[in-house]
Amino acid sequence: MDRRSFLRYGALAGTALGAARINPDFFFSSAFAQESRPLVFLSAENITGNWDPTAHTTLSQTNIEGFVMGYLTRAPMRPEEPDKVVYELATEITELDAHRLQIKLREGVTFHDGKPFTAEDVKATFEYGAKLDRPKQVYPGGPETFSVETPDDHTVIVDTSKGGYGASLFIFLASYLPILSAKDVAEGPKGPLSQRLNGTGPFRFVEQRGNDTVMEAYDGYFRGAPKVTGVTFSFVGDATTRMLSLMNGQADVIERLEPEQVETLQARDDIKISRLVSVENKYLWFRCSKPPFDDWRVRKAACHAIDRSMIMEIMGSAGEASSNFVSPIKFGYIDLENYPEYNPEECQRLLAEAGYPNGEGLPELEYITSTGFYPKTKEYGELIAALLQEQGFPVTLNVMEVAAWNERLYDRPGGGPGHMVDCGWSTGSPEPDLVLRTHFHSTAKRICGIVDPEIDAALDAERDAPSLEARKESLQTNLMPMLADKAPALSLFTSVLIHGMRTNVEGLFIYPDGQSDASQTTLG
Figure 1 (cartoon, rainbow, N blue to C red):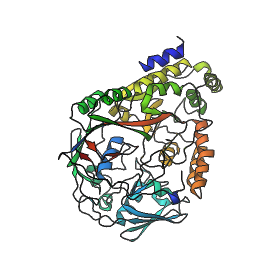
Figure 2: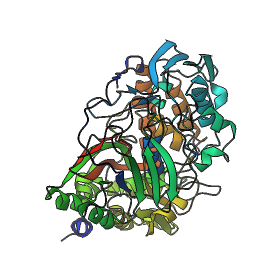
Figure 3: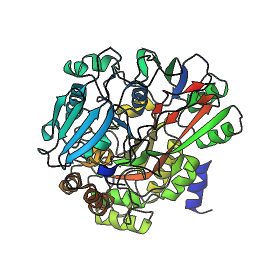
């Protein structure tokens, strides 16, 4: 058996925004007979303790927000219609011109604290969420790059003339950040925003009991009170414990199943499986802010050392092959012709050109990954480390529990911990800049820490394109190929979200970022 066989088997033990497809009836479904009890959902990730939706990028809290908070629109993001959006708190979105977007709002909606929902809440959310100091800063530029007018309580006009980019960017972004109460925003990031969730969604936040987030049905929900009495969302870090809880009836829904768990659960009549191509790619992020990965040649060499087809064998049903920095259900996706593939000869050529022939002179490299959250991270992490070592990279794999890994994830002055980090990035919107600008523009550089004027210019060019078609062309012919050449990260594959649930759970809609709509869910 040759070296590669040993590694293999060892590891195995868009449409234009102006014409975006919008379906206002998407969420409505018939009711079923039910049990009067909360839905119990087991999560694979811990929470941060700060409830401000702009203060974190933690998927578990984003999933909780999906139950409690309201959004202007929702994006189902199925592969057959990746750019489809559905009205929720908005009832109509119109491009008045290239830089002005008019949003009509639903009337008769109230926040859980009793405050009526109005245009001032949308204005406050947009302006607060765009601040550059927010960890989840999501808009195309800071609040100084756009203005928000509120002609009446149920009309919002976004004007991006100051920023020079198209207002249509806000259509996809409207599906991402939940709408906050202007009253809460006015008290700042250390006020009520950080202490509890206050939304317009079908479930009301009650309290945090240890690892359990307790929510109850909100009778004032504008589409009618939910059918279940509430949702208990619990962090259980061990994948086996989650599966056993589902099998013995203690849990109704569990997330992020391992492929072998799917085989076990599919054999049972009382459990069903949901499998979705997700909006999330998994990445090997290079710390571009410190040696040796501040040199694109070393990063590209590392990419050429990794055989992604072997990773796909490990992932099985939990991954889909892709060759871009965004998921195939993001706007602008294409398979890039210049995406780095496994090529040991090119790896060695680039190492030698960078001054590290056969890896000689490279420092000891730490590769940080997690266990218990994403499927198979330890297994494919061991494979990647071995493939890199085979080409002369002196790599040590550091497998951490989720909370410790989360603490080491982000870039910081002098470069973040380690030299490579395994992490996905899931954003509940077709908007590609929620990944690309967030990670590769010098004003954000969340994990990799890259500062590259050419990448900044390419990101600005696609953002500022005069039309959606022009933006798509800029993404596909300039920005995305440039990222493949400079390799600030290597996108390994597109994640597949696999949930297990009891067969009596009916009417639960799962989004490809992991959020769920349980407003019509019953427990028959």
